[in-house]
Image 1 (cartoon, rainbow over the protein chains, first blue to last red):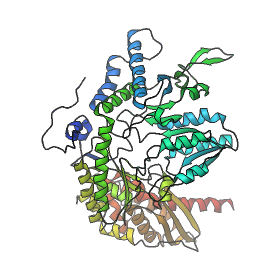
Image 2: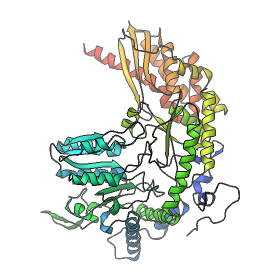
Image 3: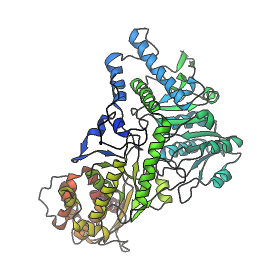
Length: 421
Length: 148
């Protein structure tokens, strides 16, 4: 196994406290590349973040050394693969502090996890039942519920946000009622950076007898997550926003709920016995894992979590908060720049618009400076509508970003002003 | 500023994006269509007044980036006085220009300032949004006319 870079090249990048960004950057091979003749400044981490060499090696090693299908062969390779895959499940369980390993279901990503809950748990919804979401949700936490409403006759309710991009708690509470069967809410908004008080929301929802799904796709790389403390019923996230591969993600569900839920997809690996008369289903979590899964992805996700946990999520969060504060201060000093999303509790995301410049034009000019940001609606068109903008420029931070990256962003924004004075 | 960037955002383009020509709804339009770029959420509506196969007036409204807006502005200027057939060949030539293969078959005139887009494949959709919308407007109407 390749060890994480250990020697610090003096003066290469900044160091904040004991969190040595300069050294950590060397764990991520892609950060050494150049774009348009400029060193890459990667600030599109909310879309997907980069992978440390250790994760890339982990995935390659599965294919090079013990590629085999899991849960079925008695041969050595199959056993080794099964062991690695199941050990990754244990890693995920510890990472979110689930009570049982059976509560961790591997899926393709957060989107599939939400669709699984909508398809399976959703079968108990009836006409007149209500699903409550918030105005700041990603399309993936809106559309599956709309589809469920069409199927079941349930009604979708949307709790509004204020001008800072914070959920209006009073409105959320007002919309909760005895008809509310399910609450689906993001932990950390991808378009605004707002952190929702999910524990408080869960308590309110449970008081009305509603189950709670938390979309943790953005939260997991930045916040310590304890599903037992949150007491949410479902928590979903993707591997690729967590320094892991694409195509793998996690559904956490309380065992009691998952046990009562019908399967999502049928196929191999999710059954106990199959006859043409009827089939019986496997125990948790396999009931929800039909077919050969993304074995390499699951194993590599485990290694990504181990890497992140090794750095300490609190240290990572503190570093990213300092970066966000630094970037926010620079943004507030930039004339003609308006921040979209100024919640009191925020993490990792700086979303903004520039007077007289469309975000797409800004994105192209930033790219030529080597700065990768997202410009668009961030799959959150209702948020854009709420703030009366067609799109925003979004810079989003990861553990390997430095103050120099933020400086590069603002220098590049000055170039945008040269083109659009 | 890099030459590619200077070329993409020529002064003419920035000017047209800030002060677009033919901007607004055309009350007496015979054809109109809405164009939408799902990638960036840009939306615009194109209006045409076609009489005896000739585009007498063209206008547009909506929200778009500088490239999309300037392209729509220059396009609406260029379409006036052309026949529907001429407009279609102009569209083909313009698409060739921004994807890097202008044939020279149809003189593009002022539209050539958008040639810089060919260095930015991600922005081709922005440059062609208004043009695809004109195509849709003309064809929708043609079908409607055919059914009469």
